[in-house]
Length: 168
Image (spheres, rainbow, N blue to C red):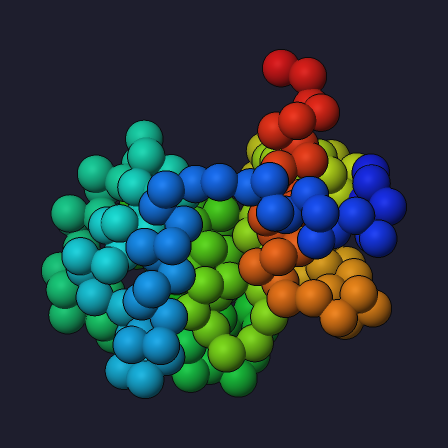
């Protein structure tokens, strides 16, 4: 993997990113990190932001089930446990699970998204697996550290660059 744009442009590109729900889903961060889990209403909004077509399936989960699964994911020590446990929730596949870790886990995580993958010059997968996820995490963390930027800023830049440059 390698970025399709110069790392020196991360902040400039990220500033062009604009999504009306972005601030709303970010506003839960402190509350979720303090509680250690996400509730059903918060998960529905995150799913609507990330994957509107599958967001309705969130209703198939009870609030207590969501609390238990996300509590485990946010407290797990093992990287694989963190991501894969989230995918057992109805309406949560790898991309949405990555959003939950990206937005609300104390560690830095990228969002697994076709736009981010395109900007990372990576093949878009039909099926994700932990090996691919681990490689993507490492790639993004190295860039964020090297450029002294947040993972959120890097994600916004990768998404925006793809939106502006990827042909349909």
